[in-house]
Image 1 (cartoon, one colour):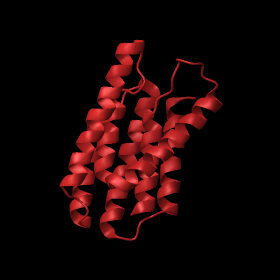
Image 2 (tube, one colour; image 1 turned 30 degrees about the vertical axis):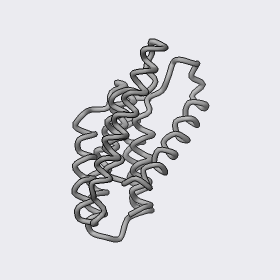
Image 3 (cartoon, one colour; image 1 turned 90 degrees about the horizontal axis):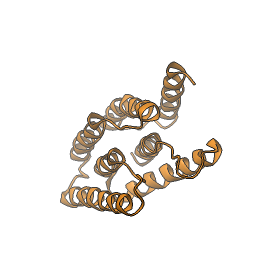
Image 4 (cartoon, one colour; image 1 turned 60 degrees about the vertical axis):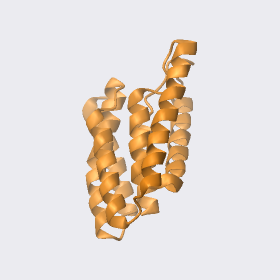
Length: 169
């Protein structure tokens, strides 16, 4: 599939989802409009290069901080939870690398998940992770990839988080 077709497919998926599940509150709409191109871009970049740009994860974290502040849902426990997500997933990924000498979860995935926990909060985060995992598993099965070949997980994290944000908002 060419880059242009991939980009159009990803953008179309996000736009349709946003239209169907458009939130009611103004700050939710603004956050959705800003998140849409960020998640679409990181999905395409990860599909093409197997890298999640730091700017994308930072943007998700900043939008999460702003949205949390405006909605009154940002507190210290959310930030502690995000730090915990970062440390636990990084440690697990590092341990797997040392045991198997191959990557299971890249640092870009870890940073994106930590940023997403700020955006979604503790309760919604787990739903977003579940959606991402189900999407990744289904895509892995449908792609026919062999054991060890792997597929980028960033697009599934991004879509799971975006869908969860729209549902939970």
